[in-house]
Length: 200
Image 1 (cartoon, rainbow, N blue to C red):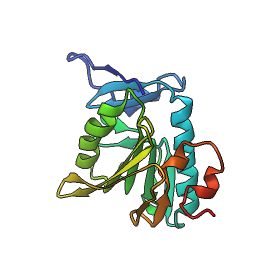
Image 2 (image 1 turned 45 degrees about the vertical axis):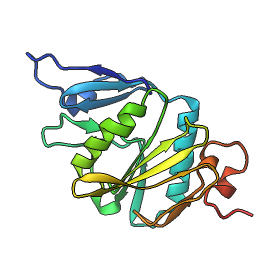
Image 3 (image 1 turned 90 degrees about the vertical axis):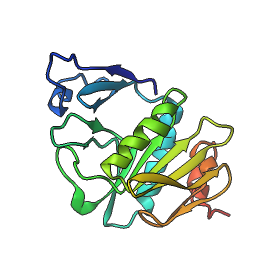
Image 4 (image 1 turned 30 degrees about the vertical axis):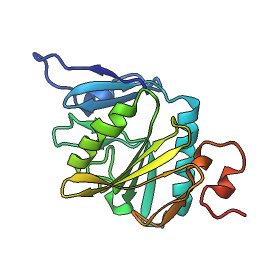
């Protein structure tokens, strides 16, 4: 997604999530980075379709003690000037909060668009590690074959655990046991049958 950054003027108070509530409900994604506004346009169809397939597959696979969230907002600091909205996230049920979450999710997932690669691979990797998100998946459908990169937090930094593409099977046990075949995040056809790598 193309991202527009609107920095708070140095003579003004940094924006908080209270300011976000006054912004128009126009389909764009409004996030905060140190009191400055990051605005992303509505996702394109391919991005939305992949995000929806992932949400459905993770939601159907997750044990009852977990919640798989789409577009949930997280306050990264106590003064509510750093607010991010991962494409998908997984939390324990007991970590649910209103109106925004303040505890790190177990997993954050970003689906890459051509214009968001730098932010998803670098900016958010640093921010999510600092916030303490235990696992971060980067799903990139912009390459020749869709790829899933799994990062795990170790000693304050992310370490790449695996990178799985195309018809290979991505398999992990965190935050729960799940298998995903990346090609079926994007391909037409009976994706529900094959996305878990167990179809005939």
